[in-house]
Image (cartoon, rainbow, N blue to C red; front, side):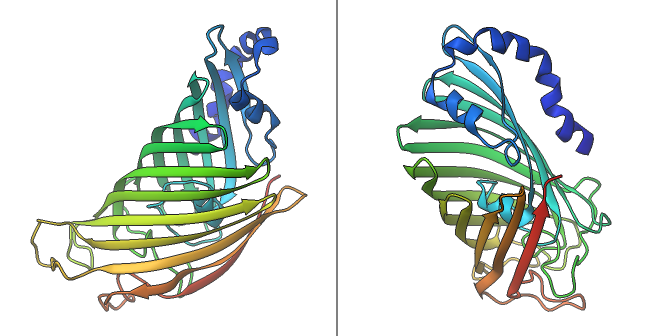
Length: 300
C-alpha cells in the first residue's frame, strides 16, 4: 500500500504533455492556486485542462499525524505517535467552482512495529470567492484484524483510545472562510461509526461517533480545537450496551510549518474529557488520559 500511495502521482505523468498544450487557457482561480502551492508540503501537480474548463490534478503530502488531523483529514481518525501520514489525492474540476476528489492514505508509526491504518476518502468541494464547502465519505481500517498495541508508555493506544479498533466509516463536512491569501478559518463536522474487533475490552461491537472542529491558520501557523463524543451503537443491545455510556473529549493543537520544509506540532489530546472508562489490566478502555505531545517532521 505504501508503494501505491507514493507512486500514485506517477500514474498520471503521461497526461502532463496534454496539460501543457492547454497551459495558456489555465486561468481559473482553482487551477492557479494549485500551481502556486508549495510543492515541498503539498506536492500538487496540475496535469490536464480541457477546452470546456474541466481540469485534472494530483496532490501528495507527507505529514505528522497531528498536522494531518489539523489539515482537513477525516475528523474521526485520531492517534498519537511520532509517525507520519502518507496521502495522495486525485482532484477533478467539474466546473469553475466545483471539484471532486478521491484520496488514499496510510498512517505509519515511528517504530514500524504496529499495524498500519489505511484510509480512503471520496468527496466534492464547492468554492465561491472567499467561501468553500466540502462533503466527503471516508473509511479507515487496520488490515489483518490486528490489535493495535500501546505505542508509547502512557499514550493513547490504537485509534481513538481503542486498542480493539477494527475499522470506521464517516461522513465529513468542511467549510472554510479565507480572510486573505494566507489565512483563514475552518469549521468541520463528522458523524460515523467505529467497529471494534471481536472480544474487545468494552464488550461492544460498534460505537457511534460525532466530532466538531474549529481551526485558524495564518501563514505558516495553524491551530485547531476538536471535540468528540462516542457512545455504543444505538438500538443494538449487548453485554456492554448502556444508553447512558458516553465518552467525550477535546483536543487542542498548533502546527508551525518551518522555512526549511519541516513541521513542528505542539498540543494535547484529551485536554478535557468525560465519561467512565472500563478499567482493564492494560489500562482504561477507551484511554482518555490527557496526553501532551511535541512532534517534529522533516521533508527530505
